[in-house]
Image (tube, rainbow, N blue to C red; front, side, top):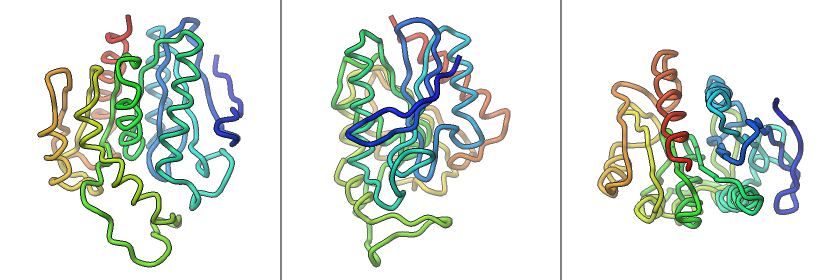
Length: 236
């Protein structure tokens, strides 16, 4: 049964959906830029249900200014995303849960940074098409605009300063990344940088001919199944 509620995280009302499997194993989901708890094409819902079938709980939530959470999108920052995700992970760790992290796009970047801070306290980590932001953003004006939304440049400056590739190289837990060869948001140079940083406990799967998130149903089903199996297998 899904429990829908607002959690008070860092003083902000954060919309969340907890799918309870009845045990102390949970995957914390982190959506992408302009995303929400459902994920692209409801992929997050499908993954959460798959995990629940396998006896794993999940927490999906909307970052500050996203979806149903408090605030305006333009005031959200990458550091806020990292702090919120870290606080949620620590909340469940303190309750005695085994915790794994999952993120898509900039949510993938976020969980990589969070995972590098939490180290071996995290059971495993999966990221789909993670944002990398290897090159310093070129700032034009006060805001950047994308598909009807606007965001202060602070978000992207902070994402660049977080150094996702370096954070990835610091991860101590089992890690699985999916990278799409036709990704319209993550350039080949960024993808090559994170591939180069891969260590023996980290796996990267390439989605040939696929774009950032608008995958076919068949490809999505395979990625969701592989993600669920990886997360389940790395819990104790």
